[in-house]
Amino acid sequence: MSKWRNLIEEFFAGAFFLIGCAAVVYGVIVRYVFNKPIFWVDEISTYLLVWGILLGWSIAAKKGKHVSVGILYDFLPKKYQYPISIFEKICSLSFSAFLTVASIFLWLHYFNNGQVSTNAQISLWIVYLIMPVGSILLGIRFLEELIHIIKTGEIPTGGGH
Image (cartoon, rainbow, N blue to C red; front, side):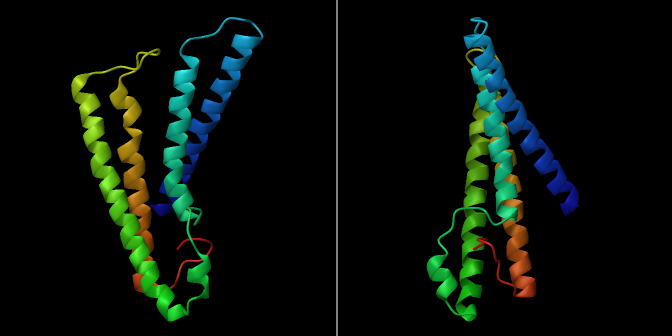
């Protein structure tokens, strides 16, 4: 299951990011070469890039690429690194839970009021759906890491603390 989730996350994050970048290039070419700007390109490309980035949260967590302050941690003895790693994963998981709940409320607001985007007229509940999805995926990743640390006693490496 984890391999499939990784593959799906990486595919969609990459696809959204690539299509968003292609839309930006298309918009620039159409605007400056053909002098015929298309009103919805900037908005759609922004949404696609944000979707790719927010799906990338979980991928960054999996690869230990989230921002961390490791200089003090790296100098601590292993017996202190273990509880700090558990504490860090609990804090990260708590943040993901908070972000999930807050983003669900935001998503419900747009879902219930039927607001649409300015130029492309896309329902904003569709645009904001990525926030709870990305938060849940990130939380699942942190939960998996916490369980792994507790079960194996292994301390994450590569910036994963």
